[in-house]
Structures are given as C-alpha cells and as structure tokens.
Length: 111
Length: 116
Image (cartoon, rainbow over all chains, first blue to last red; front, side):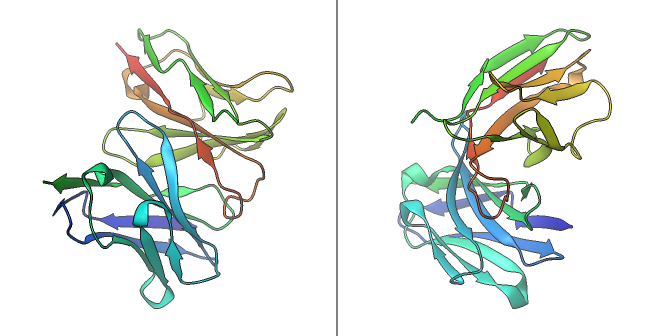
C-alpha cells in the first residue's frame, strides 16, 4: 500500500525567495513519485516525476525534486519564486497501482 | 492534439436526482481514470477503465456510483440519487498505457458537482 504526507497545507514565500514544499511517502514497493500543480478551477498538470533513474529530477517552470530513499522524502524546490507559481501543489505516489495523492499544499507568493 | 475534455464543467443537482459526468480522453488514449476531490482534500482515486472494461474500481462507493467507457464515445461517471456529500470536483485523467508509474496521466479541467 502507498500513502503520501504533505507537510504544511499552506506555504507563503516572498517573490524571489526559495520555495520548499515537503512530501514524505510510504510504499511497500519501489515507488514512482510525482508532483502536480493545480491552478484555480483547472485540472492537474504534471510538474515532474521520479521513476528510479536520477534521484534529482528536474521539471517544468524551474522546479526540481530530490528522491531520498533513506528519508522517504520527495521534496519540491524552486530557487526563486515567481508570482505565477501561486497554486496548489500535490505530491503523489504509485507502485504501478492507481495514483495516491497527498492533501496538497497551497503556495502563496507575496510581492 | 486536444486535451482531456470534461463536461459539463459545473453541474447542479437536487438531492435524489442523477448526475452524469462525461470525459473524452486525449486522442490515442484508451485508459481513463476518475478521481474525486473534496474541499481541502487531495484527489482520491475512484475507478480505472479501459475501453469496455472496468479494470479497478476499488475507490468507488459501493452504492449509487457507476462508470463506463464504451467502445465509442466518452467515459461516463454516473451518480444516482445524489446526496449533499457527493458535492465535489470530479476529475478525469487519460493515459496511453495502464502502468501509473510509467505512463503520464493527463487531467481534464474537472466537473464541479453541487448538490442542493
């Protein structure tokens, strides 16, 4: 079985500051891990995914995430926040089963 | 290549009525997933279908909910005798293959169901 915990339902950063969204997972098999972004009233868009290749995964819009097996973590980072990054972010895990999502973290970016 | 299409985008039903949500997958995709998103919650898997087959319905409530993906036409999520607790956003995703870790799922914009 798989599960995901996203620490912090709401994160607020200043424009230009580092973005760090935390995700811890639990999986009984080697996991596939994903980060999705959801803008208001829209569907989810894939930011990046980990599929057992490189542990540091680069995604779209300048985001990246690092898979740390020892910490069962897959935190999402971006060096410099932009106003357009304000959205809801979801971490998800799969072991070739249906995706299991975390509850999401709402990112606010302050000018 | 058009993305995943869902209609209607907003649906209002009175308690006891039926709700039908439609999903047209991306061209060339034969795998469809339905998810439900309650306020302040992440997406919860409901059902996974291929053309004319239900592959995994482990997330579907046992009563009042059904799904189909016919040979021709969109996938349909049907909710009979809706109750207030069914109010949520329902998202459809499609993919070209069935391994969730291998094949990216592309999401539609969702249908927001409100039960009054």
